Amino acid sequence: MAAGYLDILRTRHAARLLAGTLVGRLPSGTAHIAIVLFTRAEGGSYTLAGALAAVYGLSTAVGQPLLGRAVDLYGQPRVQLPASVVSALGMALLALVGLESLPLAYGAVMVAGVFTPPLEGGLRALWPSVLGSEERVHRAYAMDAVAQEIMFTVGPLLVTLLVSLWSPAAALLVINAIGVLGALSVVLSEPSRAWRSAPREAHWLGALRSPGLLVLLGSFFFVGLALGSITVAGVAYADDHGREAVYGWLMAALGLGALVGGAVYGARQWAGAPERRLRVIVALLALGYLPLMLTPGVVAMTALAALAGVFLAPAIACSFIVVDRHAPRGTVTEAFSWLVTTFGVGAAAGTAVAGPAVELGGTTWSFAVAGAGGVAALLVLLATGRLLAVPGRTAVAVQGSENDRNGAVEPGFSSGHQA
Image (cartoon, rainbow, N blue to C red; front, side, top):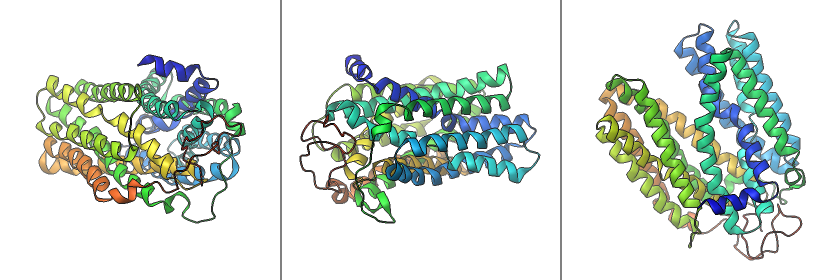
C-alpha cells in the first residue's frame, strides 16, 4: 500500500506540489476555528463569531469558482499568489483592527474568503503532467483526499497551539503568512509555471454547462450536508454524555476512518467506469451514516463514527476522477473549484439544519440529518445515471494532455482535457 504512495512522492515535483498545496490551504482549513477564537477573545458573542465565520464560508464559496476560471484563463502564478496575498491581508486587517468596527470586520473576512486561492483545483489540474499515467494520477487523487484529512486534523491543533503560546490575533497572522509561503512554493514550481489550460469555448456558464458535472455537484452538496450535520450532532452527543472530550473522540474517529479508507482505496487499481464505482461508494457512505442514529454508548459510538468515515475519502477521490472526465475543455480548475464550493455550501447547510433538529427531536434527529444527506446524495446519482454515465467530451485516445506539453502522458490516457 505504502509503496504506491512513495512512488508518487518520489516523482519530481510531486512532494513539493502536495506539501505546498496543503500548507497554502492552512488558512482556509482553519479559518472557522481561528475566527471563532479571535472573536471570543475580543469579547464578541458566539452569535457574532458564527456570523463572521459564515460570511467567510459563503465568500469562499463565491470566490473559488471565479478564481478557478481565472486560473484556467490566465495561468496559476498570475492568480494563485496574488489571491493568497490579498486573502492574507484581509485576515491581517481583522487581526489588527479587531471588532471595533463591525462593518470593517465583516469586510475583512469577506475579502479573505473571496480571495482564498483555488489551490485544490490547481493541484489536481497539475497531476497529469507531473505523474504521466492514469493509474498514478488516480492514486494521487486518493493520496490528496487522505492528505486533506491530515490537514484538517493538524490545522486546528496548530491554531490552538499558537493561541496558547501567543494570542488569537497572532494565530491569524501566522497561519495566513504560512499560507502565502505555501502558495508561493506551488506557483514557483516548474509544473505550475508551465501549465496552460486547453483552449475553451466562450460560454458564460463555463464548467457548469456540463450535465454530468451538475449531477456530481448536486450529489456532493448532500455529502457535504451530511458531514456538516455530524459536527453539530457530535456536540449534542457529547453534551448528552456530560464530557466535552467525547466530541474530540468522535471527530478523531471520523478522521481516522477517512484516513484508512482513503489509503486502502488508493492502494489498488480499480477497473470499470468511475461513475459506476462512485454510486457504489456513495451507497456505502450512506449506509455508514445511518447507524449513527442509534447513539449507543461512547465506545460503540466512536466505533460507528470511524465506520462512517471510511468511505468519505474514497468518495472524494473518485469524485475527482469524475470531475476530470466531465469538465468541459479548458475548465478543469474551475470544475474542481465548483466541487469544493458545493461541498462547502452543503456542509454549511448541514450545520444550519442540524441545530434546529437537535432542538426539535434531540441528538438522534441531528444524526438523522446526516443519514438523510447520505441517502439523498445516492438518490441524485441513481436518478441521473444516464447523464453521469457518458463523459461530457468524447473519450478518444490522445497523445498528450493540455497539462503535459512535453507528451509525458501515456497515449490513451483520458486526462479530462481532450476535445
